[in-house]
Length: 329
Image 1 (spheres, one colour):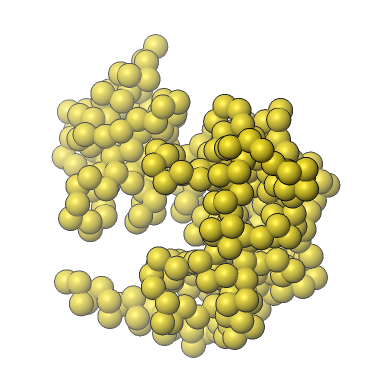
Image 2 (cartoon, one colour; image 1 turned 90 degrees about the vertical axis):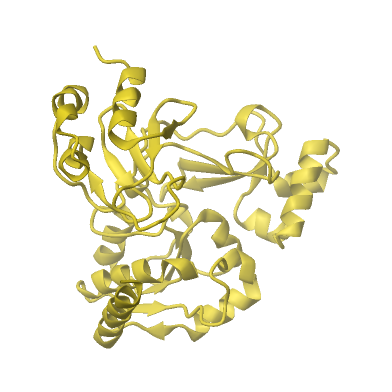
């Protein structure tokens, strides 16, 4: 039986230097398809269990790294790669390279609002509350989204954001580090995002649904009908997409400014199913802005001002991407 170490060593021969996560689930390498000049941008992830491969920058994906053999001229490695990972074709865009485990909260989980009401004394919790205040996340916002804290294990010095399905059962947990120096900013339930809807318990399918990228973007959506995509892609492979189509739910897309091209593709895909789509306009905002940085009042106004996306928008988006491509060549 081929070990994880042997699989990783084989991938290094194919792709060059890489990194392997501390759970030995995924390995990351420089993507040969991306146009980044920095070879240290290791965004091509390979799931070591079965070889599913995906680049988080250019979205190239395949069921096995054997598809890279011809691209890289590494035919001498083909037999070993097939033995290690099998062979396969391409997979759906943005397939999540994660294993499925049950969502669980730490045993000492407590709501931020309850800690404040009781008069918190623990230094880690005080620091976490100060972090929330710095980000403009108020007591009422923390209560609205059921944000919590813990002082144990991987959840220590993190703000915990739980998610519940339509029946009120816990289906996902994300925890954001409050210290900038922390290696991993987020600690998440490792399950396929395409199979869940974050906090569906709060979603009204008969009203326009605002779609943001991440859970903490929701903190600018208090009182709004909103849900995060847990990423910057949505298509027919996602439960959220299918629920929108099934319920004929109008959508307002609020991708981050640096994901404008993906936003246009998702909007066009929803239009195929005659789903009304509006898009938030980030003109004049820095590329690193997102709803959480704009704040509740500012983002609410941006949603109010969002324009309808139609076939003209699709054409304009394609033309813009074509012109940008010409400028880069």
